[in-house]
Image (cartoon, rainbow, N blue to C red):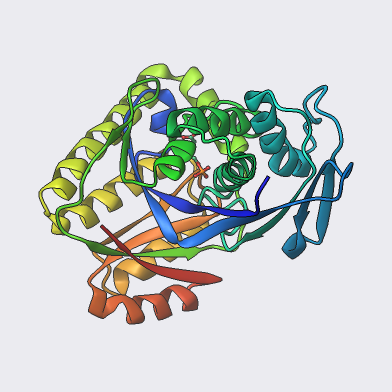
Length: 317
Ligand code: PMV
């Protein structure tokens, strides 16, 4: 066994959240400005696996591989990925200490759970010198996501494991695509946590209450996603802002926006952003706004004035 470090980035969904759960496409990109890193070092003989998250003041132990750990949320996030990796490798319990550091805000739509799982599994298989294909890693991280989120589409694990822009359609082969001209995004955090499972379940209930109406909304979102992909591939960045605004309006119809998210989007637009929308499951979490680089500082200040607790500026592409 050897000491290794592994990492995984965050992600932002540019277009298509929620509709993607119901078969429409979505576009997401890695967010390299935030990362989970895991350092794996050999442990004392007989220690089993010790998982430390000093930033969360938390230490957990995995002492048996007989059955998966229970679904308590912290165990699920920290221990279950490790258990899954060891189970997949069919290896006896190693003596290993894993130390986690993360700069990805938790439960805010930036993929913290999937990134944590991906970095933990990469660290375990790296320490045991047992390489795993991206496809196999993606399948394991998806297992963690399912345990945590109920019926996830799989977009988070896919973009985080492949670390490339992804055009994602549930149950279809993974399509990565290229960005013809880089663009600047601001990712503004409302400060309100947003557990994915609840809004996803409520959107499903809405759909079941009126499949025709909500099916049409999903289809309109799918259409926006296709137009956005074409624009990104052709370097037509000017089209993206209006498409973001349209997508946000449809997400409001799905009831997944909130006063805070609407206020942040309005503030960004009024300060000169090309467009803005919520990103991820909604109700809380983050919004994204597209901007010219020279306007980023002014829009960042406007977002802070409107209540954003943090704003990340990132170049996409
Ligand atoms: O985990 P979040 O907050 O980024 O939301 C994921 C996006 C949804 O489309 C709402 C759910 C899913 O599984 O795709």
